[in-house]
Image 1 (cartoon, one colour):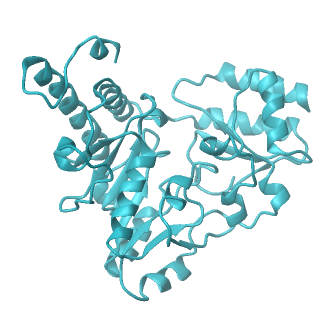
Image 2 (tube, one colour):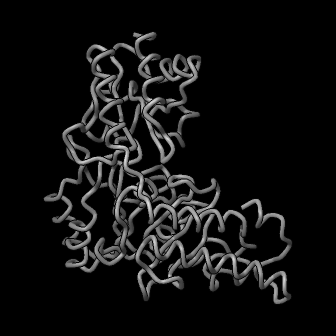
Image 3 (cartoon, helix red, strand yellow):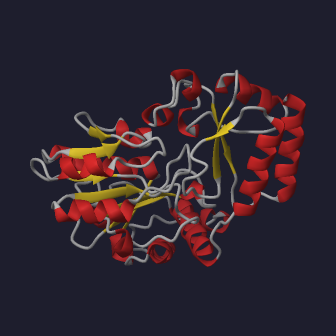
Length: 338
Protein backbone atom coordinates (compact mmCIF):
# COMPACT_ATOMS: atom_id res chain seq x y z
CA UNK A 1 0.00 0.00 0.00
CA UNK A 2 2.84 2.39 0.80
CA UNK A 3 4.40 1.69 -2.57
CA UNK A 4 1.07 2.26 -4.32
CA UNK A 5 0.47 5.55 -2.48
CA UNK A 6 3.81 6.83 -3.78
CA UNK A 7 2.45 6.67 -7.33
CA UNK A 8 0.24 9.34 -8.86
CA UNK A 9 -2.51 8.18 -11.17
CA UNK A 10 -6.29 7.98 -11.46
CA UNK A 11 -7.25 4.43 -12.42
CA UNK A 12 -9.89 5.80 -14.79
CA UNK A 13 -7.40 7.90 -16.78
CA UNK A 14 -5.93 6.71 -20.08
CA UNK A 15 -2.43 8.13 -19.63
CA UNK A 16 0.46 5.96 -18.53
CA UNK A 17 0.14 6.66 -14.82
CA UNK A 18 -3.57 6.01 -15.00
CA UNK A 19 -2.98 2.70 -16.75
CA UNK A 20 -0.46 1.78 -14.04
CA UNK A 21 -3.06 2.45 -11.35
CA UNK A 22 -5.63 0.46 -13.33
CA UNK A 23 -3.24 -2.51 -13.41
CA UNK A 24 -3.03 -2.42 -9.60
CA UNK A 25 -6.83 -2.39 -9.30
CA UNK A 26 -7.31 -5.24 -11.75
CA UNK A 27 -4.67 -7.40 -10.09
CA UNK A 28 -6.49 -6.91 -6.78
CA UNK A 29 -9.77 -7.80 -8.47
CA UNK A 30 -8.25 -11.12 -9.54
CA UNK A 31 -6.94 -11.76 -6.01
CA UNK A 32 -10.33 -11.10 -4.39
CA UNK A 33 -12.12 -13.21 -7.00
CA UNK A 34 -9.76 -16.10 -6.26
CA UNK A 35 -10.54 -15.88 -2.53
CA UNK A 36 -14.25 -16.37 -3.30
CA UNK A 37 -13.88 -18.78 -6.21
CA UNK A 38 -15.44 -16.20 -8.51
CA UNK A 39 -14.50 -14.32 -11.69
CA UNK A 40 -12.83 -10.87 -11.64
CA UNK A 41 -15.67 -9.23 -13.57
CA UNK A 42 -18.04 -10.17 -10.76
CA UNK A 43 -16.15 -8.13 -8.13
CA UNK A 44 -17.29 -4.59 -7.25
CA UNK A 45 -14.93 -2.67 -4.97
CA UNK A 46 -16.68 -0.69 -2.20
CA UNK A 47 -15.78 1.23 0.95
CA UNK A 48 -16.53 -1.86 3.05
CA UNK A 49 -19.17 -4.38 4.04
CA UNK A 50 -21.71 -1.74 5.04
CA UNK A 51 -21.78 -0.20 1.57
CA UNK A 52 -21.92 -3.61 -0.10
CA UNK A 53 -24.86 -4.66 2.09
CA UNK A 54 -26.69 -1.41 1.44
CA UNK A 55 -26.30 -1.67 -2.33
CA UNK A 56 -27.95 -5.09 -2.49
CA UNK A 57 -30.79 -4.52 -0.04
CA UNK A 58 -31.64 -1.04 -1.34
CA UNK A 59 -31.75 -2.29 -4.92
CA UNK A 60 -34.29 -4.98 -4.09
CA UNK A 61 -36.43 -2.75 -1.86
CA UNK A 62 -36.47 0.00 -4.47
CA UNK A 63 -37.66 -2.60 -6.97
CA UNK A 64 -40.63 -3.21 -4.66
CA UNK A 65 -39.57 -6.68 -3.57
CA UNK A 66 -39.90 -8.12 -0.06
CA UNK A 67 -36.59 -8.46 1.81
CA UNK A 68 -36.23 -11.03 4.59
CA UNK A 69 -33.34 -10.66 7.04
CA UNK A 70 -32.40 -12.65 10.12
CA UNK A 71 -33.00 -10.96 13.46
CA UNK A 72 -29.27 -11.25 14.27
CA UNK A 73 -27.88 -9.40 11.25
CA UNK A 74 -25.39 -6.55 11.51
CA UNK A 75 -26.92 -3.06 11.77
CA UNK A 76 -25.76 -2.33 8.21
CA UNK A 77 -28.41 -4.83 7.11
CA UNK A 78 -31.10 -4.28 9.75
CA UNK A 79 -31.07 -0.48 9.49
CA UNK A 80 -30.30 0.22 5.84
CA UNK A 81 -33.86 0.46 4.44
CA UNK A 82 -37.39 0.54 5.86
CA UNK A 83 -39.80 -2.33 5.39
CA UNK A 84 -37.46 -5.25 6.07
CA UNK A 85 -38.97 -8.46 7.49
CA UNK A 86 -36.86 -10.03 10.25
CA UNK A 87 -37.12 -13.78 10.74
CA UNK A 88 -36.60 -15.51 14.08
CA UNK A 89 -33.60 -17.45 15.33
CA UNK A 90 -33.29 -20.23 17.89
CA UNK A 91 -31.59 -20.15 21.29
CA UNK A 92 -28.44 -21.38 19.52
CA UNK A 93 -28.45 -18.32 17.25
CA UNK A 94 -29.49 -20.22 14.12
CA UNK A 95 -32.49 -19.58 11.85
CA UNK A 96 -35.84 -21.13 12.72
CA UNK A 97 -35.85 -23.21 9.55
CA UNK A 98 -39.48 -24.36 9.72
CA UNK A 99 -40.83 -20.85 10.13
CA UNK A 100 -38.47 -19.54 7.44
CA UNK A 101 -39.50 -22.18 4.91
CA UNK A 102 -43.16 -21.35 5.50
CA UNK A 103 -42.51 -17.64 4.86
CA UNK A 104 -40.45 -18.28 1.74
CA UNK A 105 -43.36 -20.15 0.23
CA UNK A 106 -45.88 -17.43 1.07
CA UNK A 107 -46.42 -14.48 -1.26
CA UNK A 108 -44.17 -13.07 -3.96
CA UNK A 109 -40.44 -13.91 -3.91
CA UNK A 110 -37.80 -11.29 -3.19
CA UNK A 111 -34.43 -11.21 -1.41
CA UNK A 112 -33.30 -13.05 1.72
CA UNK A 113 -30.17 -11.90 3.58
CA UNK A 114 -28.40 -14.17 6.06
CA UNK A 115 -24.88 -13.50 7.34
CA UNK A 116 -22.37 -16.34 7.08
CA UNK A 117 -20.86 -15.77 10.55
CA UNK A 118 -22.49 -13.73 13.28
CA UNK A 119 -20.26 -10.84 14.30
CA UNK A 120 -21.14 -11.02 18.00
CA UNK A 121 -21.32 -14.75 18.75
CA UNK A 122 -19.18 -16.22 15.96
CA UNK A 123 -21.91 -18.77 15.14
CA UNK A 124 -21.64 -20.12 11.59
CA UNK A 125 -24.98 -19.81 9.83
CA UNK A 126 -26.47 -22.51 7.54
CA UNK A 127 -26.28 -20.37 4.43
CA UNK A 128 -26.12 -23.24 1.88
CA UNK A 129 -29.22 -24.90 3.38
CA UNK A 130 -31.14 -21.61 3.49
CA UNK A 131 -30.03 -20.81 -0.07
CA UNK A 132 -31.35 -24.14 -1.37
CA UNK A 133 -34.65 -23.52 0.37
CA UNK A 134 -34.82 -19.99 -1.01
CA UNK A 135 -33.95 -21.00 -4.57
CA UNK A 136 -36.71 -23.61 -4.53
CA UNK A 137 -39.12 -20.76 -3.77
CA UNK A 138 -37.46 -18.46 -6.41
CA UNK A 139 -35.89 -16.01 -3.91
CA UNK A 140 -32.53 -14.28 -4.42
CA UNK A 141 -29.94 -14.74 -1.66
CA UNK A 142 -27.40 -12.35 -0.12
CA UNK A 143 -24.84 -13.19 2.56
CA UNK A 144 -22.77 -10.80 4.62
CA UNK A 145 -19.53 -12.79 4.75
CA UNK A 146 -17.50 -10.08 6.46
CA UNK A 147 -16.69 -12.21 9.53
CA UNK A 148 -16.12 -15.38 7.49
CA UNK A 149 -13.49 -14.25 4.99
CA UNK A 150 -10.08 -15.72 5.71
CA UNK A 151 -11.56 -18.05 8.35
CA UNK A 152 -13.93 -20.30 6.38
CA UNK A 153 -13.79 -21.59 2.80
CA UNK A 154 -15.76 -19.20 0.61
CA UNK A 155 -17.13 -20.05 -2.82
CA UNK A 156 -20.19 -18.49 -4.42
CA UNK A 157 -21.24 -21.77 -6.08
CA UNK A 158 -21.30 -24.10 -3.05
CA UNK A 159 -22.80 -21.37 -0.86
CA UNK A 160 -25.62 -20.96 -3.38
CA UNK A 161 -25.79 -17.18 -2.99
CA UNK A 162 -26.31 -14.41 -5.53
CA UNK A 163 -24.49 -11.67 -3.59
CA UNK A 164 -21.64 -11.77 -1.06
CA UNK A 165 -20.21 -8.85 0.95
CA UNK A 166 -16.61 -8.51 2.20
CA UNK A 167 -14.66 -6.02 4.32
CA UNK A 168 -10.87 -5.90 4.16
CA UNK A 169 -10.03 -5.22 7.79
CA UNK A 170 -11.60 -8.49 8.95
CA UNK A 171 -8.95 -10.62 7.24
CA UNK A 172 -5.78 -8.58 7.55
CA UNK A 173 -6.47 -5.87 4.97
CA UNK A 174 -6.95 -2.12 5.45
CA UNK A 175 -9.98 -0.39 6.89
CA UNK A 176 -12.30 1.49 4.56
CA UNK A 177 -12.29 -0.91 1.61
CA UNK A 178 -14.36 -3.97 0.77
CA UNK A 179 -16.12 -5.72 -2.06
CA UNK A 180 -19.45 -6.98 -3.31
CA UNK A 181 -19.32 -10.28 -5.21
CA UNK A 182 -22.05 -11.09 -7.74
CA UNK A 183 -23.35 -14.28 -9.27
CA UNK A 184 -23.21 -14.10 -13.08
CA UNK A 185 -26.27 -12.31 -14.37
CA UNK A 186 -26.92 -10.30 -11.18
CA UNK A 187 -26.59 -6.53 -11.55
CA UNK A 188 -27.92 -4.53 -8.58
CA UNK A 189 -28.60 -0.85 -9.15
CA UNK A 190 -25.67 1.38 -8.12
CA UNK A 191 -25.82 2.88 -4.65
CA UNK A 192 -23.50 5.75 -5.68
CA UNK A 193 -24.15 7.72 -8.87
CA UNK A 194 -21.93 10.07 -10.81
CA UNK A 195 -19.31 8.11 -12.72
CA UNK A 196 -18.66 5.03 -14.80
CA UNK A 197 -16.25 3.31 -12.44
CA UNK A 198 -16.59 -0.40 -11.59
CA UNK A 199 -18.45 -1.06 -14.87
CA UNK A 200 -20.97 1.63 -13.87
CA UNK A 201 -21.83 -0.30 -10.74
CA UNK A 202 -20.15 2.03 -8.22
CA UNK A 203 -19.32 5.66 -8.99
CA UNK A 204 -16.28 7.38 -7.51
CA UNK A 205 -12.53 7.47 -7.98
CA UNK A 206 -11.06 4.15 -6.91
CA UNK A 207 -9.17 3.88 -3.61
CA UNK A 208 -6.17 2.35 -5.38
CA UNK A 209 -3.92 1.88 -2.34
CA UNK A 210 -6.75 0.42 -0.24
CA UNK A 211 -7.76 -1.89 -3.08
CA UNK A 212 -4.15 -3.05 -3.44
CA UNK A 213 -4.07 -3.90 0.28
CA UNK A 214 -7.41 -5.69 0.05
CA UNK A 215 -6.19 -7.78 -2.87
CA UNK A 216 -2.97 -8.86 -1.17
CA UNK A 217 -4.82 -9.66 2.06
CA UNK A 218 -7.18 -11.85 0.05
CA UNK A 219 -4.28 -13.69 -1.55
CA UNK A 220 -2.62 -14.28 1.83
CA UNK A 221 -5.90 -15.38 3.44
CA UNK A 222 -6.46 -17.90 0.67
CA UNK A 223 -2.94 -19.30 1.06
CA UNK A 224 -3.03 -19.39 4.87
CA UNK A 225 -6.53 -19.19 6.43
CA UNK A 226 -6.83 -17.95 10.02
CA UNK A 227 -7.18 -20.86 12.43
CA UNK A 228 -7.13 -19.91 16.11
CA UNK A 229 -8.91 -22.93 17.57
CA UNK A 230 -6.08 -23.68 20.00
CA UNK A 231 -6.08 -20.07 21.22
CA UNK A 232 -9.87 -20.07 21.49
CA UNK A 233 -9.75 -23.15 23.74
CA UNK A 234 -7.02 -21.51 25.82
CA UNK A 235 -9.00 -18.28 26.12
CA UNK A 236 -12.30 -19.92 27.03
CA UNK A 237 -10.64 -22.22 29.57
CA UNK A 238 -9.10 -19.15 31.22
CA UNK A 239 -12.49 -17.46 31.34
CA UNK A 240 -14.16 -20.45 32.97
CA UNK A 241 -11.35 -20.96 35.51
CA UNK A 242 -11.05 -17.33 36.61
CA UNK A 243 -14.57 -15.89 36.28
CA UNK A 244 -17.19 -17.71 38.37
CA UNK A 245 -20.54 -18.14 36.58
CA UNK A 246 -19.29 -16.77 33.26
CA UNK A 247 -21.31 -18.07 30.28
CA UNK A 248 -19.82 -18.65 26.84
CA UNK A 249 -22.59 -18.00 24.33
CA UNK A 250 -23.31 -20.81 21.84
CA UNK A 251 -20.34 -22.86 23.05
CA UNK A 252 -21.89 -26.09 21.75
CA UNK A 253 -22.71 -24.61 18.34
CA UNK A 254 -20.32 -24.42 15.38
CA UNK A 255 -18.41 -21.12 15.60
CA UNK A 256 -15.40 -19.52 13.97
CA UNK A 257 -12.23 -19.68 16.03
CA UNK A 258 -11.75 -15.91 16.27
CA UNK A 259 -14.81 -14.82 18.27
CA UNK A 260 -15.84 -15.64 21.84
CA UNK A 261 -18.92 -13.99 23.34
CA UNK A 262 -19.00 -14.13 27.14
CA UNK A 263 -21.78 -13.03 29.50
CA UNK A 264 -20.21 -11.37 32.53
CA UNK A 265 -21.93 -12.10 35.84
CA UNK A 266 -23.16 -9.20 37.96
CA UNK A 267 -21.71 -6.47 35.72
CA UNK A 268 -22.58 -4.49 32.61
CA UNK A 269 -20.47 -4.75 29.48
CA UNK A 270 -19.79 -1.00 29.54
CA UNK A 271 -18.23 -1.21 32.99
CA UNK A 272 -16.11 -4.23 32.11
CA UNK A 273 -14.88 -2.75 28.81
CA UNK A 274 -13.50 0.22 30.76
CA UNK A 275 -11.87 -2.04 33.35
CA UNK A 276 -10.17 -4.14 30.67
CA UNK A 277 -9.08 -1.03 28.81
CA UNK A 278 -7.33 0.29 31.93
CA UNK A 279 -5.41 -3.01 31.99
CA UNK A 280 -4.36 -2.66 28.34
CA UNK A 281 -6.90 -5.08 26.84
CA UNK A 282 -9.10 -3.83 23.99
CA UNK A 283 -12.37 -5.71 23.60
CA UNK A 284 -15.93 -4.92 22.57
CA UNK A 285 -19.39 -5.04 24.02
CA UNK A 286 -21.30 -6.93 21.34
CA UNK A 287 -20.64 -5.39 17.93
CA UNK A 288 -17.57 -3.17 17.74
CA UNK A 289 -19.42 -1.00 15.20
CA UNK A 290 -21.96 -0.15 17.89
CA UNK A 291 -19.57 0.27 20.80
CA UNK A 292 -20.26 4.00 20.99
CA UNK A 293 -23.81 3.21 22.11
CA UNK A 294 -23.64 0.53 24.76
CA UNK A 295 -27.08 -1.04 24.80
CA UNK A 296 -28.45 -4.55 25.16
CA UNK A 297 -27.26 -6.78 22.32
CA UNK A 298 -30.03 -7.25 19.77
CA UNK A 299 -28.39 -10.55 18.81
CA UNK A 300 -28.64 -12.00 22.31
CA UNK A 301 -32.14 -10.58 22.74
CA UNK A 302 -33.20 -12.39 19.55
CA UNK A 303 -31.70 -15.60 20.97
CA UNK A 304 -33.95 -15.29 24.04
CA UNK A 305 -31.54 -13.88 26.62
CA UNK A 306 -32.95 -11.57 29.30
CA UNK A 307 -32.18 -7.83 28.99
CA UNK A 308 -29.66 -7.85 31.85
CA UNK A 309 -27.81 -10.73 30.19
CA UNK A 310 -27.85 -9.03 26.81
CA UNK A 311 -26.28 -5.96 28.44
CA UNK A 312 -23.45 -8.01 29.94
CA UNK A 313 -21.99 -9.45 26.71
CA UNK A 314 -18.28 -9.02 26.02
CA UNK A 315 -16.74 -10.01 22.71
CA UNK A 316 -13.18 -11.36 22.74
CA UNK A 317 -11.68 -11.36 19.24
CA UNK A 318 -8.42 -12.76 17.93
CA UNK A 319 -6.81 -12.22 14.55
CA UNK A 320 -4.21 -13.67 12.22
CA UNK A 321 -1.36 -12.30 14.35
CA UNK A 322 -2.67 -13.12 17.86
CA UNK A 323 -0.21 -15.29 19.79
CA UNK A 324 -0.41 -17.63 22.80
CA UNK A 325 1.43 -15.05 24.90
CA UNK A 326 -1.38 -12.57 24.19
CA UNK A 327 -3.91 -14.95 25.67
CA UNK A 328 -1.56 -15.59 28.60
CA UNK A 329 -1.45 -11.81 29.24
CA UNK A 330 -5.25 -11.73 29.09
CA UNK A 331 -5.36 -14.54 31.65
CA UNK A 332 -3.27 -12.40 34.04
CA UNK A 333 -5.77 -9.55 33.59
CA UNK A 334 -8.71 -11.90 34.22
CA UNK A 335 -7.12 -13.01 37.48
CA UNK A 336 -6.50 -9.41 38.51
CA UNK A 337 -10.12 -8.44 37.84
CA UNK A 338 -11.75 -11.53 39.36
